[in-house]
Length: 471
DNA sequence: GGCCACAC
Image 1 (cartoon, rainbow, N blue to C red):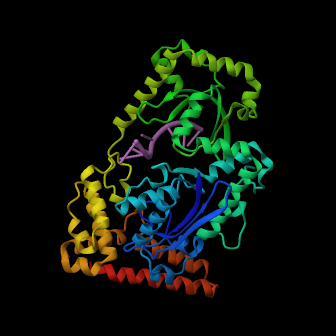
Image 2 (cartoon, rainbow, N blue to C red):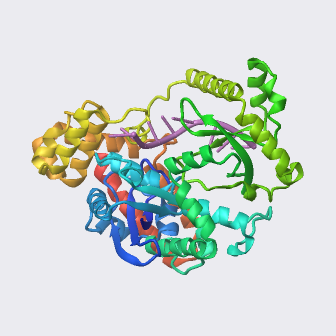
Image 3 (tube, rainbow, N blue to C red):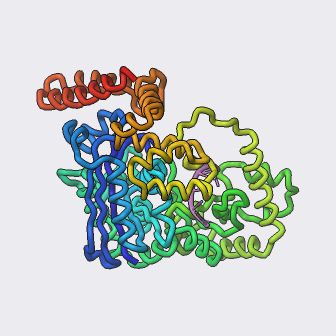
């Protein structure tokens, strides 16, 4: 299988609202020979206020580029999607991508009326370089030098692992990512092959069903921890794997009645561990957990006895699964509805697009702009009408205004309402930006170069402000 | 069919 290593730069940290400004992706074969690449930039999406630190300090994209790049955000998405599809079945590798880049891509597709799960459907898989490099470091300290944190834990910031002059450029970060992947591929074939096997849900599920005792890595409080666990079953509502931490003797729990067991299972540290099977996790053979003092003390023989006791007690496993299901159900019923979610935030609201909306989305994409505009309002699910209107407004404001003035005005009012909001929002408002500018002016008061840059960003946002003040 | 959710 070929690999795509990729990175993207955006106008801020929100995966729902910020605008993708740059994407670089490199296609390589399974020995890392380069086959193709894609590099694209986009101007700021209409109606988005950038986060000053993100554009100025992190991705270092000038106000001029934000304003004048030829390609729109929508067009960049179409170009990237086309390229990705031409590459066939691949594994998409990014750094911390399960938490960030993949989320951005999903939502970007979603907002563009495309199928969101491009990177893990139709035979594609996702890998997260952060997961594999953390695990590599834990099982083999010599694999890579890292800085140490105050608490003496290895630091996994990409630009300290692979220092470069031009870090945080999409291409530079992708090349750095590639060198990390190659490092694991060359220095620890066992880990590499193992990871390729468990990085998608199917592989991870098969592995945990097959291995009586296996090692799961969990990251919390700034470091990675190895657990020796044994499979119980899949969560009846959420499908993730549930496994027994063999640091606990399961026999101690067998005689408890349901109520007492439920209470005991909730005690921290929890004897039941979650195996996040669809999060590109590293799962290893049990030997890798034996480095952990807790399991070393217990000894392999006792661990095997515990796993056997668990595996031969189906009644207990089923009872545990029932308890976990009931607790989840209770939590769902207690959860109050989250009001006021913006359309961009509803990708995981539990509903996929119905057949009619799916067909309309396809029609939207092959239609010319006159006909795209006519589709607005026809979707069953109103969020797709919202997205369609915003796309048409961003791409062809002239045409939208002349052929569907009410929609045009509504979109402009939506944007104005958002950017001029004085509340604490999940997107950057004009007010947030002004505060960021003030802080930066104070910080750089003696740096004329930075001050000049600040003025350019400020002008850009003032122009957006002027444009929507009248809306 | 893909997704979310946990636990520390």
